[in-house]
Length: 236
Ligand code: CDP
Image 1 (spheres, rainbow, N blue to C red):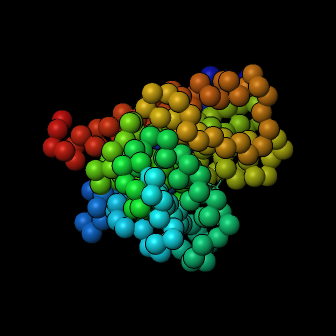
Image 2: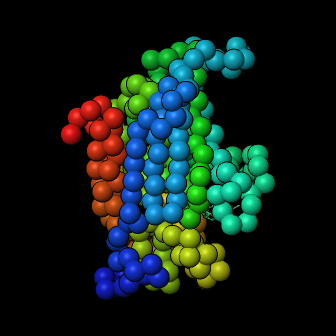
């Protein structure tokens, strides 16, 4: 069971998120953009559109298309990453699209496409969550109508201990350890899950605990995102 006194390698409590930063309006050329940071993990999202979908046969006359492209920059980790798409980036692009779609009112844009480019400037685990958090703010900045925003956070399990917002060290022990588990969650502002991945094993009881931890963490992220969005509108 989770030990509430557990102190992590970076000094955090089990339910403590790394210092967060969020800023809206960071790429002038984009229709909407935002930055989201968890400690050393930094994601920038830039939105282009809605614009006419090309090629024409890809157009959907019933609703708009959300197209997400997640990319980790070569210099974002110590071992340089080979530029260009990979299996991992293709998967994360797809799950990002699925995490965002439930709150977006893209039926208002038939035959059009909204492109979301997510670039990871620095990667220190939980990059998909940081990317989703930046993307929804960039979409709001681009004026895409939405029912709510989404907030994404990971929960990890080190042996039996649950922790929120997995860092690079924890991610590496998950990779080596037995029964290592990493669960990224995305919640809509009204507490529904729009994305959940489970890498590893967890009991149903402990999963419930992980869900509660993630939900509480997502509320803190939501406040940071909301503040950044308000600041971009000149509100306090
Ligand atoms: O980043 P996230 O936790 O969403 O996804 P992951 O696939 O579990 O990757 C965990 C971490 O491993 C990344 O955040 C990077 O810090 C690192 N990584 C890396 O160093 N090189 C790669 N090619 C992929 C990931």
